[in-house]
Length: 344
Length: 266
Image (tube, rainbow over all chains, first blue to last red; front, top):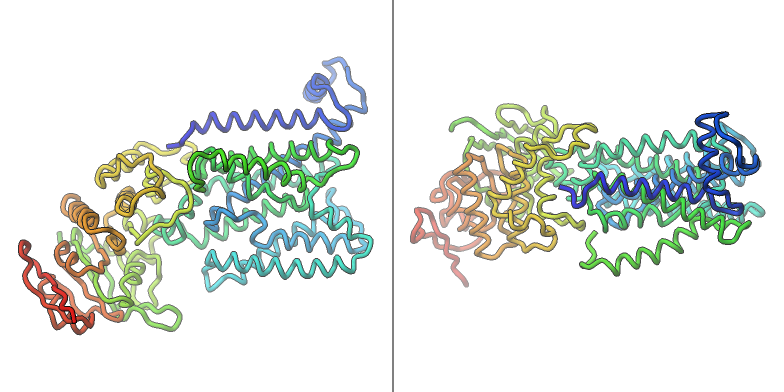
């Protein structure tokens, strides 16, 4: 049934993710010894029992600065990877990524508007930028779906074309706003390159249940996604309620993308390539592909963010640049190594 | 064997404003093997789609075992009617066994428990039986995309069989195949019909093969049924000239008790 034992694969990937997290928490501008990290965590779980061998400064670094950021990176990486898998399956297109259906255009416009407004607001730790980015992403998708819809059906090709057209239109509006933005131009551009400067747990605490919940629900539709890969007509013959499932998956994918973008801005590459990496190694069956892609995407972004903040410390490289620079050559290497002619 | 498997009465269908099917009344009895023929554009594939429940008719309705298709969920329909489309373009690397396994989707229980348990014994048995019946066991670990046309057709039939349907609908099952494979697929379909009592309706473009392998033919012209019955009755020279616009001679087949159509060139 599965080409490799799924339990073994998922266990191995989970360990890899944990190793990446530990590494990312320990390393950075200030290196915190692994032993201290372990003791700090244990002390939180069993307070007062362990002797304190670390400095209060290190504790702040680990729990207030790094851990939330690393967890955010894992959430964003996992969310984008799963969204990529969902959109590639739903649209039967190996070149689809989470942004293809207008989410990036909407989110970028939302963020640009937020950065251009002289308003400072904070809701549950979220500033105006993440909120408008998320809202922009969701509204763009709803717009695209309604443009593409004919009666009760939204054909895949029309969705793709409507996504492209809408993205172009939103990008044009955003370009105009950038033109008149003056001093905030640099902040807008940095946002579009992606960055994980999360401080504190409040944002992560809200986004985490949303992302994990959406991933679980997407996992429930793994078999339906397999059927979608055979084409909408064949999926219907196999008993899938195509239009309803399409809308559900579209919403799930967009939720994951919107949540990711609200935490990190536009991080490219992860949603497009991680699903392919997983598929090259594990095959296209979504029952394994979905959880595996989530774990690989999470680990990948955790490590990419580690590099982004360490390579040129104290300057931070936008993480979107790192994902592309590191990820693309690795993907090319995988493609060349693949013994057969590449079939998605 | 006189129960009605699939039936429509005065079924009409139009794509937006252009009518494709006009008041089609068709009855498929349980265990029958029927060939649907007609010139291009006569509505054969559309009729197949309406019969499978994927296309809702503009008028009239389709009933399966006496139940209106409209009242059944897509999953319930897929447990009883399986469709083999003309071809499947799958730009993803599925093996044959994985493809046939997808035929079990209509029988999948929803929810996490079923997903984690994976395929159960019933699923595995159905998949093995389907591959055995179509002679595709040797292809099980090959990639579907790397197979020849004939092999893919057999795998697609295996996929449909894995659904364990009562009714099998096929859309031009021989259209891309060479002669030997055309015969192979039609013999397979005839065998499935004869041995398992599977009700079969196949859209065919080759009139001679239709006449040989299908005891009952339905001739569609511009969305209407214009002839129905045994091949000898349906395939007359006048009918073929009128409906297909081709001058032919019809003679008895040398070995089978069926008509054989000879094209007259020039």
